[in-house]
Length: 201
Image (cartoon, rainbow, N blue to C red):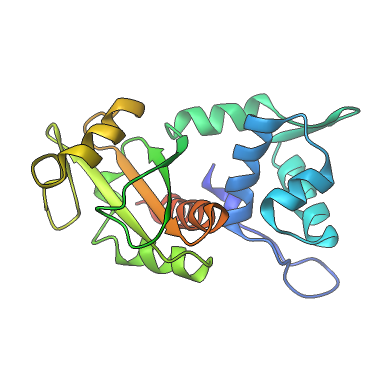
């Protein structure tokens, strides 16, 4: 299903102005706030009219959403994709661990082995306009950074906040995007998470 992030160049014109970040975030927005109109989705994703139309077409062609009279709704295939990757997302406060005012966390199941050092995920978040991203791994009952810095021991309040809201199991990943605005933190988290999903081995 990671093929959903592969965006084809149209027969006419250049590459679309939406990317994997928008594909992933659109599924979240439509699931959480749908039915939602195209303009509402475009506003939440900060996309122009043409790009939002292209994104909706892309999601429909992959069977991930449905266009109804009342607006866009997530399809069974879209829900199944999010469930299969263990997707959960929430705004959190992790200022001890992150570099800016707003933080947004995304949980993914069983992808810890796909993370090398977290730097590439951070870079993807920065490209998306965030201030950065922090990748946490859940290994053998402990929440750690890729360099094995133990969050449970060194930052227990942050660890507790994450554990209270996310059902962590061995091998899971939590990516925290951070930014000067909530939307930037969200974009950073989704960009980093999409990158990890696209590059898992």
